Length: 138
Image (cartoon, rainbow, N blue to C red; front, side, top):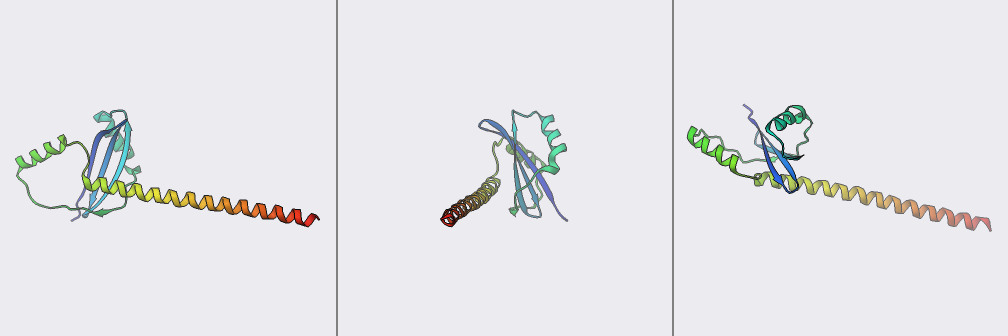
């Protein structure tokens, strides 16, 4: 049996409210960060999930530590209360977001480097062509 869980944590990250979606499926964790802007109301978050969940782009997956065990209902309530009061995101999610950010940064660097090299090559060829045209005229 496949177990899939999605958790949304909304918190204030200096100037905006941010939501972190954590998707755990078959022991694999993937994360997505969504910026809300102003503090979202509960119904706004609910509408966002209903209308935009299929558009969310999750990061690549990493293995997640999940433990399956039955829990006393009162203990479960205490855990839920602790999670609700806990502000922030799990460290595993933070690591995945950081890794995704680093990968995107490296991609952008590579693309800009290629553009810069292509522009240099174009300028060089233009100078060579001009030089040959000047030389031919005499």
